[in-house]
Length: 453
View 1 (cartoon, helix red, strand yellow):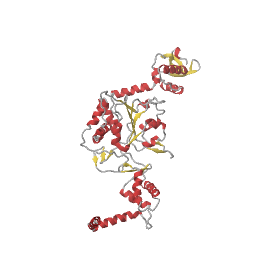
View 2 (cartoon, rainbow, N blue to C red):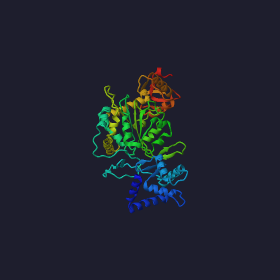
View 3 (cartoon, helix red, strand yellow):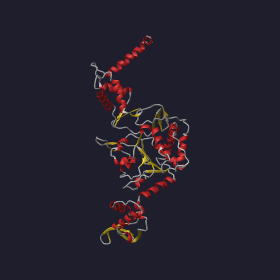
View 4 (cartoon, rainbow, N blue to C red):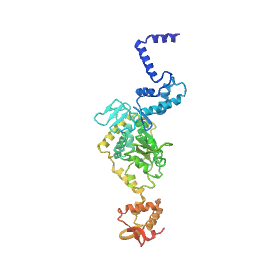
């Protein structure tokens, strides 16, 4: 009885304007239902897109918060049409979603290098700075721009314990590089250590700050699964938090992703391959370096920034709440990353690299190329202008060197290609008439005991 009385009193508080507004809303809703009570798809699409602007790019929907979860969208539409749909609501919902995709289709979307989309607005990298307005975008971070956010002391303390001081600016610039959809620097970053240092915590913080713009994936899967790159479309960073120690069977996909400046081939299961634009950057953590079975070229190495972390302090007590503490500092961490981005842009996408990091790369390049190591071994070879050696004898010597140094020899074909390409480097001259009728090189000879298999 009391409830009926309360409802009656509530109704009596309505004004004529309230009633008119309610009737207008009902009439607006009825615009996408015809005289027979059936849903008019085109009218519903217009109604829905007016209240929730969307765009469709590469069969994916985006709104002001970035990529749309289609399951949630279908649920939202299903709830809206359910009173009017007498049957087959699931089919009608799917058909309406497909119609919305066609209605808001866009063939291209120009990458926005001048702004960063944040939870509470948009930060422009020019004189405009931060504005609270939002717009349609491909990536929006779940972190607020707070210009007065305190310095992230926990984060900075963590980095000071993990890295030598001269490598911190490099990491700051690379994490800032991830904030915009650009591959102009043409670099990937790998942090290595012996294990247990906590380096992969960096990836977790990046994931919390950048949200769905981050994709967790194995870099080896990029080279062994032709469908893997499809998951990287419209993502800003791929994190591999446990880099495998096995060598990559190929490096073509990794190099094309790191240096992507134009559209590339993207394959999806059961669908025709298409051309898509990838601007994802690679951030890897592991206990060893990234190596390749068949690629020791400078092109493979010069795309990497290799940072070695400090050894774990044996007296360190791990904090189980470290990630929670750093998550509370995300606005300050964003400002720290933004500072790194601005420094990188001012330096024309050239990273600040410490001498330690440069030497890391040189050491890994030397270690990853046993062919150059063999050529530097005077126990097996002698260089002289009047010397000459058959290619087969050079390969025999190389194979023996590999066996005695626990190295895996490359194929004869690759060895031959290496000699031909590196002839100038070692002052060698190719000839088809070594020892009369054999192919080989002038300028080098093999020691007699190494010239037999």
